[in-house]
Image (cartoon, rainbow, N blue to C red; front, side, top):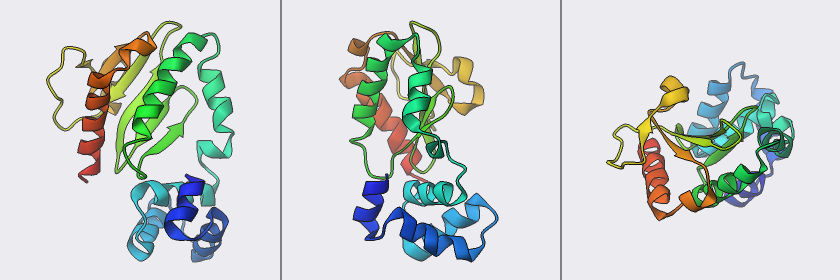
Length: 178
């Protein structure tokens, strides 16, 4: 995100922090709105700068540590995660990858997917749809409750195929309509 920010805006993360901090925004949403409306940011970049400015993001903790912790004792599932990220990174510069303690949120205008190594042998890929496509792999939201509308259970990197890439792309597309 940081490299893309400089490329897209011509300013570094620190330059944007120096622009935003003196404005005295108290709320994250105010900062995001300002960056989007006054500087033409996409939601992903505005959110990134706001989180870094407030130092409240998971990225202020080393993201690789969060990922390592998630896959400790589940190393065989890390390949599934890596393949999913490889697909999502091709969607657009507005995609935000947000590692958390137990999962990784994928966002554009809103969260469209959640990657969670739920057991030692299973990743639950949560998906958020306005209208879920017909597909026998797409289940109800299960452990995600209202955070996602559906999920796909993955146990092997081989299951991350073109069909699943299409499902992920549709969740992204629907989230980007906002």
